[in-house]
Image 1 (tube, helix red, strand yellow):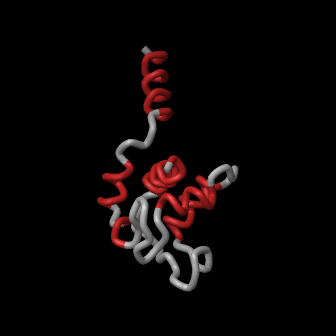
Image 2 (cartoon, rainbow, N blue to C red):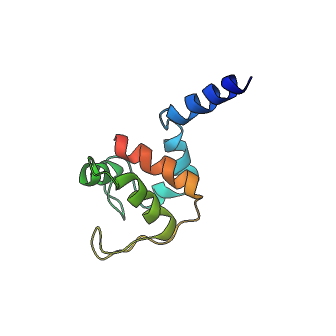
Length: 98
């Protein structure tokens, strides 16, 4: 029984973040960002390209989502977002897949 539960948890943890476009909409990310074009903030594809291959990119992006950031993409800061750390991690994983 415990092995089955452990396998189910492992399977869920390794699934791609397919719900992230919906999560990005629900979390209001799409107000300032789009997948492939700059709006108020950079496109998600531009963010992915800038940080792809960096070991700390996922954690750094999740931290920026939760705490906000400034100076990374110009003069307009990214404000603190009302997103759980788990959702921020899901979003950052998804962004880095683009």
